[in-house]
Length: 291
Image 1 (cartoon, rainbow, N blue to C red):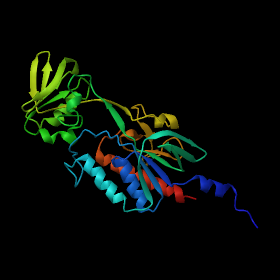
Image 2 (image 1 turned 30 degrees about the horizontal axis):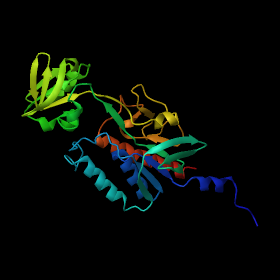
Image 3 (image 1 turned 45 degrees about the vertical axis):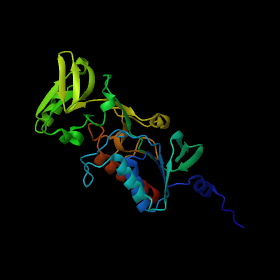
Image 4 (image 1 turned 180 degrees about the vertical axis):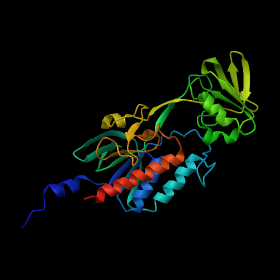
């Protein structure tokens, strides 16, 4: 009898999933939905840590403007659950490696294998070290005027930013706010509540505003990109092509973590993250059927 225990069969036994997605934010969830619709066996691993975890209302997303990000994730998970080829597990990844076209992922004490992994782990914001600022982050303190500017319409706001982009942000907010104050973070001693939103305790005296915009530093969440050895952009984001492919075969990066070569920087928005997740999933499906 002819044996079928050749290299190809052994390879198929090693690869359990068509794709493993790490991260359950908008980019990862959209990738899972797209793969599920193509009937590809997919594992989504979600650590439960999200960049917008302190945000109560997400904005500038068509049909979902103002919805709680947690509710967005709940709805997305319910939609994905209709596709029986997608498995969703709440677990953080403890180890990862890629070699010979196989990606090995360890989560919750179990090893999972695939020919493709989509990194959708997002980033972590490093806020200016101003007392009281972190308590208001994601509410009356934000970074994106497109996502949170309208909520302060007709009221004064502050741009707490000493960088070159501060004046640009201030000019973008001028049609929205009644007043825009550009403040050097070094001049802010403390941030506290006020009747209208925030009180900035400045060297020159208190300044009451409805909200404030800052330019936090950021870094990739966790060390998975470093473990995989993917190339980075000067910004610190993972370098990708327009379909999320990285410099390592079988490894894709999407969402806030990723930056394609044709972009000036990572695109920090829900809509961009969703688009990136879909494109990476398309690229995975195409790789599975390519000759």
